[in-house]
Every structure is written in C-alpha cells, then in structure tokens.
Length: 293
Image 1 (cartoon, rainbow, N blue to C red):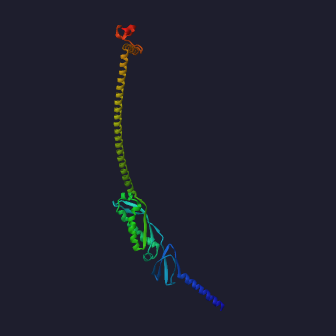
Image 2 (image 1 turned 30 degrees about the horizontal axis):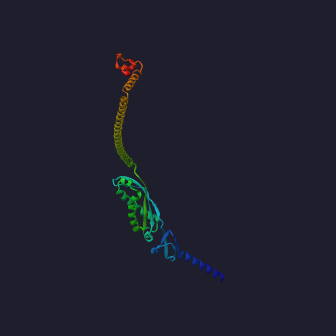
Image 3 (image 1 turned 120 degrees about the vertical axis):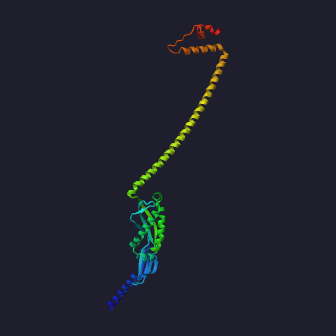
C-alpha cells in the first residue's frame, strides 16, 4: 500500500510538472509572440512576461524584435545617363507585426531576408536610375537613401509585417571600363577650374600692380614737386643772405668770391689757364691794394 501510494504521489508530481512546463511559457523582453491553435493565430503580439497556454492544442511562436541587419551583395545599377555603378549596401529591419510576419514567412528569418532583398534591390535600382552620375557623387549617401527607405518601409509593413529602419550604402564604385573616363573628365574639370582661378589671380595681380605703379608715380611727382619747392625756397633764402652780405661790405664780398674762384680753379693737378695778366680775374693777385681802388 505504501509503495502504491508513493508511486501515485510521484506520478502526480510528474503530471503536474509536465502540465506546468507545457502550460506556462516566458516571452523575453527582446521578443514578441503569437499563440496558435492547430496553426491558426488566436492571440496576437504577446508582450514580454510569463503567460499560459493550453497544452497540446495550443502552441506559441516567438520572434526576435530587435533591429536585424541584412547585408546585401554588391549590385550593378544604371544611372540616368546609362552609366553603370557598383553599389554595396545593407538594410536594417525589425519585426513590428508578429502575426503578419508569421503568416508571410512562417516565422523563418531566412525566408524573410529572401523576400526583403529583391525589394531592396528593386528600390535601389529605381533610385539610381533617376539620378545622373554627378548627382550620385555629389549627394550625401544618407540623403540618397532616404527615399528608397521610406518607400520600402511602407511596402514591407503591409506585406511582411516588418519595418525597414534604414538603408545604408557602404560604398559606390565604378566599373573599370567607366572609371578611367570619369576620372579623366573630373581631372579636366579641375584643370579648367584651376585655369580660371589662375586667370582671375593674374588679373587681380595686374590690377594691384597697376594701382601700385600709379600711386608710386603720384608719390614721386609729389615728392619731386616738394623737393623743387624746397630747393627754390633754399636758393631764394641763400640769395637773400648773399645779398645782405654783399650790401654790408661789397668789396670784402667780392674779395671772398675771388678767393673761392682761385681755390676751385687751381685745386686740381695740371690746370692751365691762358689769360692776360691785366685780366680782372687776377685783380687781387696783381695788387694787394685792389680792395682800396
């Protein structure tokens, strides 16, 4: 009797444990879940926490609702002018409608990426087809992807129950057959711009140089005029001083000027003058009394 009772207790505890393990389930904070009865959704978007389900007849599917990354393969797109570019991009996506996501993909993440990738490729192909190569190079990559991300997000929310958080371009390359031509054109444009800047610089330099020359001529003319004015004033003042000195003692002034004339005349070597002895030039040499005559 005791053994039978023990077996019943153990069996009961095992049944309770089995019932609890198959009736209770936990949804993690990074997950959302749906409850199914024979494959049909009967409870949507179950939030994190401890929940109850009926064993055997009901099952639960949990989905990761964190932002996931789809790294696409580099693809070749044509621009507006039919030039090819190689684009390497990736997509950030997130499950926001567990029920729609389960119905579209059966909860298979690989299936979801297989459905998202062609849509991304088509969206990028359309976007690059609306732009020329210069616009693609000049525009910021974040701005370039804004339109495709918004359009694809609205489409994927309805079709798969996922949100397209962002589309980013890792790099944009040119095929080898196009790179050389593009680089040559870019080099030609830069050389043209450089020539224009050099021409403007030379023009500005000539203008500055002409202004400097004109100011130099004006300053030289003003300085020359000032010098002539000062020289004239000095000559006039000197003449006035000589006149005053001459008026005080005309004979001494004449004698002083004669001595200066002798000094300047006979200051060099080998000087020769042919004059008559009675010339007025020798007046003070011939007669010491010339001053009194």
